[in-house]
Length: 273
Ligand code: GLN
Image (cartoon, rainbow, N blue to C red; front, side):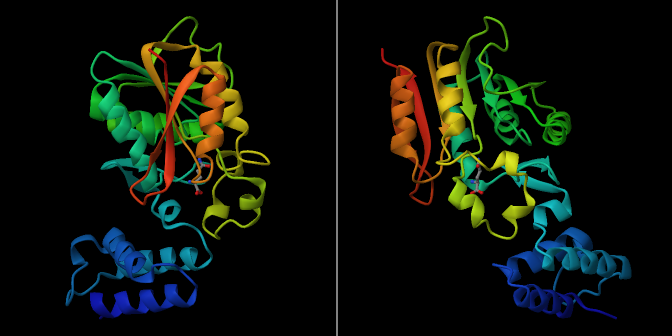
């Protein structure tokens, strides 16, 4: 008979010796995932829960992110399928959804570029009631995008295409354009955390200085903003000034916004009025 508290300690120690950053948190998450209601102190764990937890732990000690092992992760309070081939939604990206919520609402039309799981457009659609379009190029990510739109019942239309192609959607204009493109620099790509190295390079690498996609996406799409519309992109914490400059060159007035950890995280651009 194995009790929850014993198993929790055992998993915590195994994860700690494998160098996991927050072993206590992950041990609790693993038992909650596989033991459900039996995951409380004193409770006896069913054999299947133990087997499932052990198998998750053995994947986790090899470095695979917890999110891929579970196959789902929460973003902005909504569930998203995740797995090999798609970037795991990060909590700091929730800032984009908060910004969108202050800018658009029911009746607005928005576009998200490089959508991956779809965490940005799905959350914005659900939170604001706006009609959203989402563009993703890669097969694996595109399939997650479709599944996540369906699971959440969000009003998002997914298009498989290159986000740098500003001719998509004909003459359509957008009240808000968002993107969390790949933005890691070549140096950062060489020193990824073990877990991040499991994620697709195509979702992370933004060229030499990390700015490749901003240089292509911003000028291609700024002309597609509706009157009074805004462009909001997530950035790496050191990229604020450089991305602001790209926005200025595209005729937009930029504002750099910090995330909840106090780091530059979003550049918001709009046409001078
Ligand atoms: N924020 C991610 C990371 O630190 C990078 C995401 C991206 O490139 N858009 O790994």
